[in-house]
Structure formats: structure tokens, C-alpha cells
Image 1 (tube, rainbow, N blue to C red):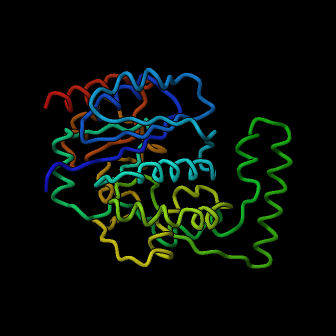
Image 2: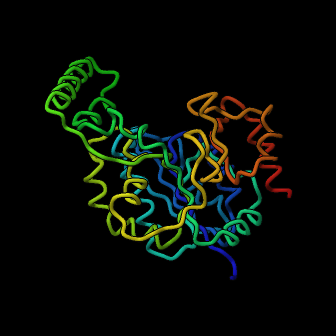
Length: 294
């Protein structure tokens, strides 16, 4: 097998300086980078991002106003994957601008060569997935998120509560599978998913955090193909199946600090999240230096 090609799908909404560092670490000829800038953000300059990337191909979009945990987030990540699928890539990596690679590009490429054909997807326990967020129809979820600082918001929240209570009374229940929304998947799975995107978006439209349902539900309930997973997670906090260092025990998720540097670079993970340049700039600079110099 020759050189392996990657598509990086990045949903960006803040910290433009941090995003530039991430792009510099992904700037290799084998990579194509698809960046979506939240329409609500005016601080990220698309032309500056394009001028920064010298070796990789980069495409930048500003199509959605993304509200965290709403259907807009799911529509955005689905749109990026659909755009990326128009040309062949060996793997598609969904990340955010709060993520960083913690291994070199060469190391990451060799890892995916050795594990070619495996899908890197995280699953929560089925019991965890069967919660109010997914069992019932949340018709007003996007309105609540859009108007969370408005006086009208309290009225909308009350209406939503009555709607959920009624659904409980008449015993409406739905079935979904869930897990982390981040992934690394092959072209076959990506195209299979995108061919079903309209049906899938319709299925998850009235859920909360639909981005954490759509891929897992597709694999379990929609796709007829038997895709091979890299690993199954041991528990809900195990992100080795994604090859990502994510810590939900210390945060939501935990923001990595400089004191965690040795833990990160000695881990088996290929990528890590979450970083925030406003909380700890030094860890980002040290990770970038480590990955660039190796």
C-alpha cells in the first residue's frame, strides 16, 4: 500500500489562533482539510486560514449557525462528510478546533496503514443511550438553544416539559444507539452513510445531542454492511476505540494542562481533546513542538 490519504473534517467556532496551530500540524500533501466556520463567529478569517496551509488541500465553509447539541451540529458534520466524500480518501477524521494530533503525521499514517479497513467509533452502553434525550421527541430543542438568554425561553422550556410529560403518559419510546460524535472511518463507510443521510437526519431530528446518535444508529439499525470496528470500548469513558485521549472523569471534557504533557505524549492515542489556548497555551505549544520536531 502506498501513501494513505486523509480527510480532516473540522467544526470551528472559536479560538482562531489555536485553529491555525491545528492546521499547521495537519499541513501535509496526503491530507485534505474541510473546515466549517460557525456562521455566528466573525473572528475566524477564512482567507488567513487558506494562506496558512501550504501543502495540504483546504476547503472552508460557513453554511450553518451551529448550536451545540442541536440538530444544526449534526447537519454540519454530515455536510462536511458529504463534501469530503466527493473525492476518495482512505480515512475521514471528524475533529474540532479544540483537538490536536499528539503523534507525528508519519506515525499516524503508519498506524492507519497497519489497521486499514477498521472503523474507529465509540459506543456508549445501550442502557445509557435509552434516556430522555433520545426516547422522546424534543420539538423545541433548537428554539430553546437559540433563545436561551431570552425571556420567552422560559415559556418554551415549560411547553417542552409538558410535551415530554404527555409522551411519557402515552408511552412513546424510540430506539437509538449512541456514543462520541468524533470518529475515523473508511471511504466505504463514509459513502454508505452519506447515501443514507436524508433518512438518518430525519430519524434523529427531534432528539437532543443527535450528533452522538446518528453514526452509531446507522451502523446498528440502518446499514446492511458488516463493518469491522478497531475495538469495543471497555466502558463509557474508554476512548481507545477512537485512538483519542479524552477525559470525561475530570471535566466535560477535561481541558488538558501543561502538567499533563508527559501523560499525553506517552499515551497510545493519536489525537487528544480538549485544549483551550485561553486556559493553557503552553501545553498547545509544547504538543505542537513535539509533533513537529519528531
